[in-house]
Image (cartoon, rainbow, N blue to C red; front, side, top):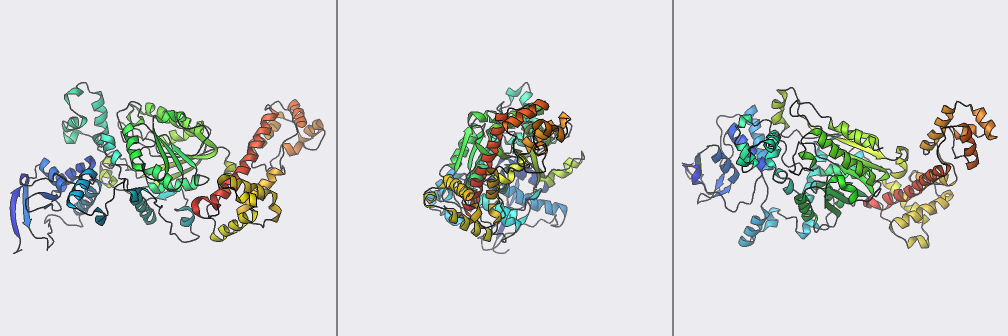
Length: 637
């Protein structure tokens, strides 16, 4: 090293950058401090000829705070790499590998661009930010005319039809999932500024038990802030620190596939009474859906609106308590309820007493969740899905799970919905590896999954009428194009959107005999059966069950019923083995005379049948629209 000079100095001789582009994060700084305490100094920092810090400001800041005062300076002109050699560490040891993890993780989570400073400096010194891939969310090219990630999976594969295979375990560690998530995050350019430290509550995230204690202490005024209170507690007495909770951003791939799987078509309306940040809403908007989010925190709503400003998406955020969702969204107007509610006190988002994450106990928390979701169910259309992403949380005193997912199931089932699916979302281990040893002292394992609970409002047997198959081939798409075009008349051609497809569906009903046998128009053929009164017992199951139950509880035989009616229809009205039709008003009145449990009004039964018929007809239009127009897969109108 003949050309380089090596000398020693003190850390206070290094001058921090007063225009540092990186604001850092509270969580990131906590990891830097932890790494320095546990492993000592790792990589070098970079200073200029005047001892001003070019790179490593946060490292020097934390090193100074814990008393690492001595600095070795290597003077160089940049023509050689300066390598820091740790003579006390072997890479393949536990310490070596954990230091490598700490180095990568601290860099990843402690970067938060100070856009104002970066813009000012780049303007002053004429730095081309585009050359370094730097864009801001208010840049026109970033916020308009952006396409969603492409699906390049092999034709005919499950990934091609569903993005990821529709199995009960979704592995986010999978390479395809990770690549698609990366593409989404680059597109969204949303690094969670408003969630950093949960809007000023970073220490509450790191020390939730201390935060609860702080809210209840009598001499709170002696501390300027919660951070001062934390600093007054010896580190070994601060309790469990939730190191994995940096800025929890919703997985965009999960939002994308749930919208694809559980809505009838693009353009459908999705809503969430616990909206949080913009991650879900932007994915829905960019995929062609309408999204409404209710969010309690004004600062979060303001930030969300700033992020979506200028983007060509149908997304809106409303500042209110999620329990008041019906004040903003009409009943039976939404196509999908999609939500990831707070996980009790796992992340404390604000000190608002109405905030579900800020409740004094779990019972108070679940009451808020219960009311918000029960009210939300009323906003959901009939024959539509609700998807809730949850994760269980532990009681900090006993260590036992609250069984939060089961409470969500009870809430929706009590609201009359069917529990249809439970998916397990497997997540990367991440910093769970760091806290696993600590948890195992109490024989608790580190949780690396979440639960995705799927519910259905309406008759589950109508799902295949309301939701068109996703796994259709290119040949089937072309057949559908030809079928639809063959049904188009001069008048129909003048229509557009929903009116066009409804007219096509009506035309298909009239011309069904001339349409070739095609699996894609199976539902149109089913609609003909509706029109001719050939209703299937499977579709009319609730009404059929009503008649069957009344017959069984009457204790009568089929022969006795037929004798009373004066016809041979006794078995037809009370069987699910044949084509079924509603009795005439006269026969229904006769049946009520001998079956006390036939209590429903005849006009109500007629109205229910009419609703089911309309459901079928509307489903034809929605199905045609979904395949032929939505998704952009079969462009016709």
